[in-house]
Length: 358
Image (cartoon, rainbow, N blue to C red; front, side, top):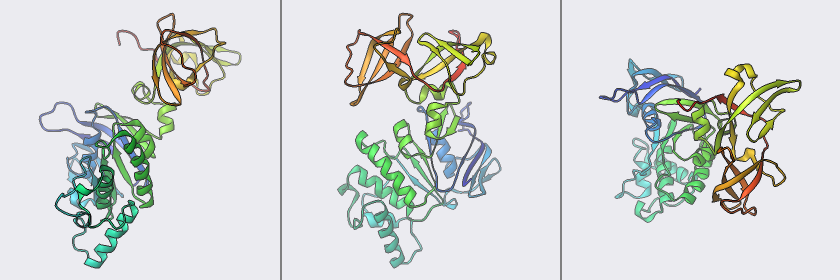
């Protein structure tokens, strides 16, 4: 692995709880990793520890095989050959684009410096922009210049801390896809921090979900969504609910009995003996719930959110159980209306039953 974190602990002075605790992950060369999680979960602290801006209390950080952080070793940030892009761009307003990029190219001959500036500006889609000043550029263009400046010295690793948070939603989504293409074209290895799931899915090869300083899961986007390792990941990623279920072994396999009907012929279904009294909670995503007027299972529309091509309906059954469903937008049902629903799933994710006391 190009970047390897092993049981990394980080604690700020005066704090009882560690900001990062026991985090292990590996990022192959040329890959883009993304850290997501709620505010205060430790994702930016983890990025700063990789950069060398905060020391490790325990565990270690290895970069290209070399230990750069551990309890007894701390390589200075400038010696790690790490490029950083921040959410506020950190461009020098009194310097033009060319001189902003040249700031990290000290010691290079003037001709070689000019070639490198032209190369990275071409890479980020801003050719012949050397003479423009930051205030003459849009937010998206400033972010591209910040990326070009970080890429110019040829860092071992790129670290990006919520680089799109100051941009509007539409620009953020487009720029995330463009930045992925730029990093891939540069052959860069990158670790990226965001709080936006769609951003993470758009840019990341591997995504880590953090909570309270701990890494719950480090995986690709598909696995995070369809095979979450913990209840927190299941709840944090996408739209879904936990539905009480009872497992039953029969002649054809394991049946899963829920208030929305019984499910059979499922992959990755545990045996009833895996849970106390064969009772568990099943994760049902909004795309697992299908609107079907012929279904005997009925649910009332309590909320709906228009998403263009579809609605996200929140539905409540007689028992009080609520589920969510993606429904094509030409099925425009009024709040309060009862509609038929059924589960359409080829696999399920189960968790131990969560009691009211828990």
